[in-house]
Length: 211
Image (cartoon, rainbow, N blue to C red):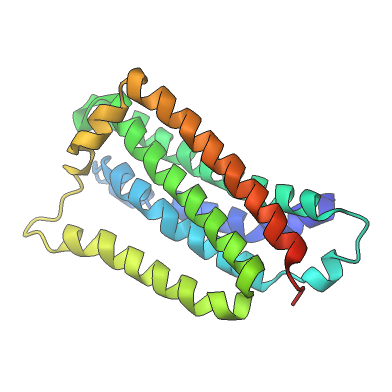
């Protein structure tokens, strides 16, 4: 199981390394608000990690091992969740570095939390779709999704006369969910949704044909 964990997590680890470097240069120039862009990029990074990890996987071999489908699904989804939480930790470091000059910590943290949560859920969906439809079919779909995510994030940023990362965390939704009365019930619903996706993932994996 340790060998499987090491192999399955390789691309998530390398993606985290490259992801953490996004904010190094801007922060060195005093642009600490780069954490806002990083938060928006998490779904794209997670999508890419799922794609390259799955392209290197051999499910015919895995299904010959003395481990259950439930264990494989749990391992895969745990790696995704762990990677998303690690990204949240990296972004939080940049948020703390930025201080109050880029807005209250609670709102900035909710911004990062939302980006990482969406990244985890998107990665869950991609993982389930790979088991359902196969990596060959899903590869162009995920690549197009990554490209569209990049355009969605970068075009509004670079189209300004003076590119600035301020403003995104001023959206009302982040202010709303920074209050515990909204955040805690939402967190419960999110956990329930994650549990539902896990049950679906086990069912899909056990019915899938290994490629």
